[in-house]
Every structure is written in structure tokens, then in C-alpha cells.
Image (cartoon, rainbow, N blue to C red; front, side):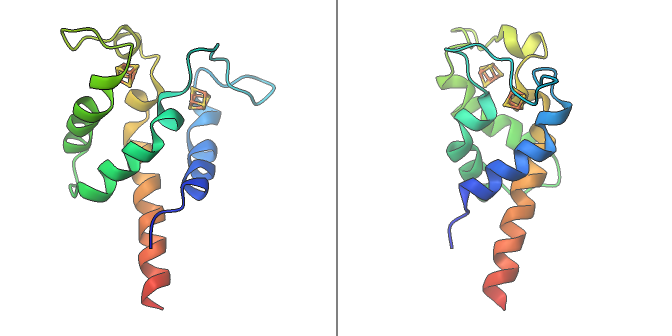
Length: 116
Ligand code: SF4
Ligand code: SF4
């Protein structure tokens, strides 16, 4: 069974948005278009990375994010530098361990449901 992106989105909104510097008192995101959240914009790719990566360390996930998400992100320059990452203003980079844990928890729930 494929992971349900709506359920993962809901998990992540609960787990990371309330602690994010971009979360407002009105419970909205303060990012101004055309900028959008790097987590939710790239969720499909991030879920694919978590499905294929198996490690207790966050490093292989971070490496895969650099290769598959950052390399296609308009914020990263030709030298692999990103002012958002350097300024701790990328939710994907800042909250990657939580993002991975939440997606893994959803994958575990799917495995449990399939075993029953
Ligand atoms: S930047 Fe992303 S994680 Fe932060 S409040 Fe906005 S939507 Fe949530
Ligand atoms: S760290 Fe930079 S390049 Fe990578 S997703 Fe975030 S904003 Fe984009």
C-alpha cells in the first residue's frame, strides 16, 4: 500500500508548524508567495527518500535531500550553497529529523495495518 500523503501532511502540520519560526499567532504560515514551504512543496520526493533510505542516522536522509531536493530548488546556487539553509530559514533543513520520524511512523502504521 502506498503512503497516504494527506495523512503525512496532517502529521507534519501538527509536528513541525507550531514550532516553526514561520508559524503565526493566527496559526498560518508567514512565507510570502512565490516562496512556499520546502517540506510540503517537496513532500512526494521526501516520502520517496524515506521509503528508500534505512538508517538510524539522519545523515543519509540529509544527503539524499541535498541530491534530490536542494539540487532542484531555486534557492540553491551553482556551488551548492543556500542562504535559506545558512539562515536557518528552510523548514526542511531545520526539521529534517522530525520529518523523517513522522514519515517513518506513518510507514510503520501502514505495515501494521497490512499485517492484520
Ligand atoms: S514554513 Fe512550513 S513548517 Fe514552517 S509554518 Fe510554514 S508550512 Fe509550517
Ligand atoms: S536547504 Fe535551501 S536548497 Fe535545500 S530545500 Fe531548503 S531552501 Fe531549498
